[in-house]
Image (cartoon, rainbow, N blue to C red; front, side):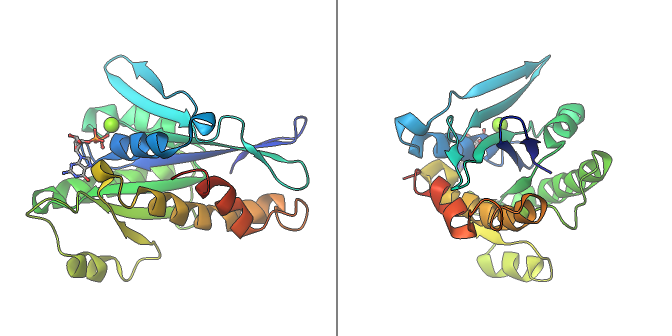
Length: 217
Ligand SMILES: Nc1nc2c(ncn2[C@@H]2O[C@H](COP(=O)(O)OP(=O)(O)O)[C@@H](O)[C@H]2O)c(=O)[nH]1
Ligand SMILES: [Mg+2]
């Protein structure tokens, strides 16, 4: 769970965008970054390891304070989707507080999506994340393209799972805020259970989500 720094009364939350290569993970991050007001934009950082790239940034560089004074900071990460970069994916996934799985809606990406989702499940277990409990949102991206799975098909396929499904066109900045918002809604109860955000810090779920989403337009 989140990194709680007791001395500094600070909670550091890590959110990871996972998915197959080229599904739009980086585009999601870039869109969120672009939509933030300048004073809330952290520098976009690129971690280069040999031949792969991991992108991350502080959602609100200064964080925000719960009424109790607790400082909350959020970092967003993408993983490299290429099959070869499994070690990096595991490292990035490690200690994630929430995950967005970015699927590519194109019909010819069904297998890549499935393999990547399976890889997520395996890697989560390898880094000690309980896949049945971790907050997860599934985003079907690239809804603007032709040759995509229908909304009905996708809904039918995911109906029996516990995860929210959001449709997006990250390239056109559609659905990205909704995706983040859905993830934060799911992250809050876990954080609340671990750190008594409501009882001890007077931070309700609406305030938690609102503090973040209100700064993205
Ligand atoms: N048509 C369309 N293209 C998209 C969308 N989102 C991302 N892309 C494109 O898909 C390609 C891969 O995107 P990128 O974010 O780099 O994928 P990543 O490998 O998952 O990080 C780029 O050319 C993007 O412009 C979308 O919603 N619609
Ligand atoms: Mg990328």
